[in-house]
Length: 131
Image 1: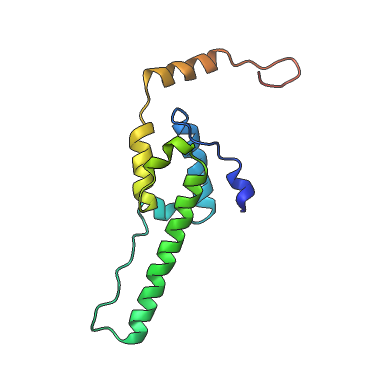
Image 2: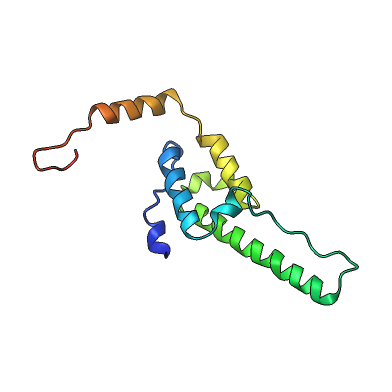
């Protein structure tokens, strides 16, 4: 998938966490980045001082690859949040996601009311289109 798939993710404004998080999760999964965000793939450690130069080099490449993928995840998240929310971007994608979830993931009375009203006003017109 390309950046055109990212266009399907709305911009997080603060009150659209559920829709945003579902679509952002799907996008990150499609890019092979979600396991970095949910913490399944952790930052590997560097090789021990006693390791051979080739082992140190291989370990360093693994760390750099992890950092590259984690930064790609942060980049996608950053592109799809409103500018005022960018203060919640952290040093890694897992901490960023958890910060956003902590701030916007709980359901408030206003959000619940908005959902109920949207469902109550939902109707299908005679031509099969949703209003």
